[in-house]
Amino acid sequence: MDANDLLAVSPKLLAQAILHRRERLAEIIPEDLEERKGELIDAEPKAKSAREERDKINNKVANLKHERNSAQKEARELFERANEIRERLISEGGMKNPDPKWAKDKLSAKLQSLENQLETSAGTHKTEEKFINEMKNLIKEHEEWVEERTASQPLVKEMKDARAKARKLLDSAQKAHDAMVELAQSNEEMHESFMKWESARTRAESRTMRLNNALSSSQDALEFWKDRVENDNFDDLLVDSVRVRDGGQSSKAIARSLKQEKESQQMKTARGEEE
Image (cartoon, rainbow, N blue to C red; front, side, top):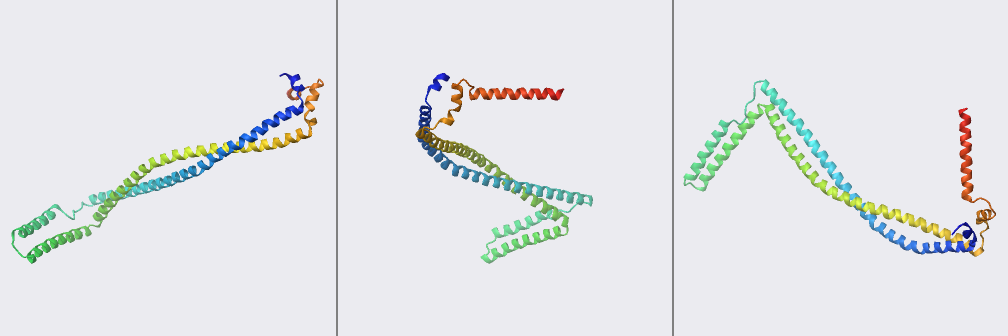
């Protein structure tokens, strides 16, 4: 169909064709719109839930990481303190073992002797109780003796306490690290779930918005073209058509001429500035 054929078509017929097209869109869009709304309603809570679970796991991971790092830092400081004490003790002439091997051997021998007497004697329950109490007293006396020797060397006690506490802190740090690694896998899975549903949500939201706009536009167009067709009012829409029919330029040709004129004027202005 050339320009003459288009000009030969009555405005009312063209308007009716446009109106029919808009009516069809107005019939089709609501169904699609409801489907997209359903997708959005389904995806929104799932995306929200996945995001909240992911963030919750992230917070746990962050707390465990802080716990691990803090424990490692404190343990390192305690080991450094223990080493400082050790160096000091060495420089001052060494340190005494508060529980030397000979003392432990002596205690072991006494306990073994009492145990042998208990096994070989045919005493009463009171006799057995006496042996057991003696064994308890020996152990208690030995522990008190060790404590006294330790107390006489406060730096030794501090060094041992520091090392013991540092080892406990390292155990805590390892547990926190293991828990963090385990949560990292769950976090990855939850993040993938969130990305899946967030993508579905944004896609459904975008489609819903476009369809809403299309429906609104179609409804406005329906009212516009219905009014034109019913009142057979097309005069203001035929200005360009009348001009072309009378031998004038089309709106596209006019726009092109205006553009060329503007570009020509700009070139003249540029040359004038150069001169």
